Image (cartoon, rainbow, N blue to C red; front, side):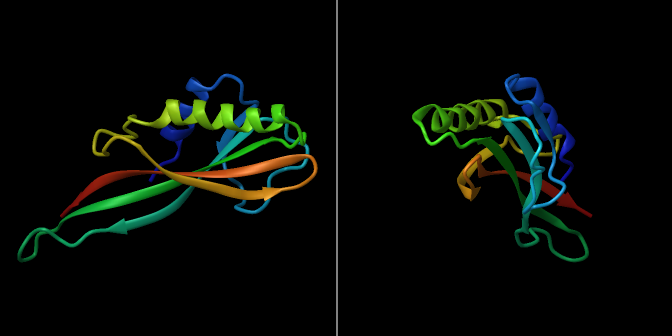
Length: 135
């Protein structure tokens, strides 16, 4: 799945983010990045069984991608609120969008903490869309 439409939806929908781009690493977020920031990476592709007989192929492919949200870990309510605000705004920017004409609208799957230290918290939200593969 191409990530640029996803990155564009987030950039256009969440002005408060200082950076939105592809994840360069699934474990490392630059230490000097201004916060809050978001990074997008592919997560899982899973194809369903072929719905055609013979040599033809028609499969639905569920594609999941993740958004890493990096926010300040201030150890006060405002730090948690920044993370939750960014999560809500990113969800609003993504849910219902179609990355291409062949994809179904984006749906939210779930999220979990990816990393935390004394300065920042990194949260990973997972989204999915479906594409139709034909040959």
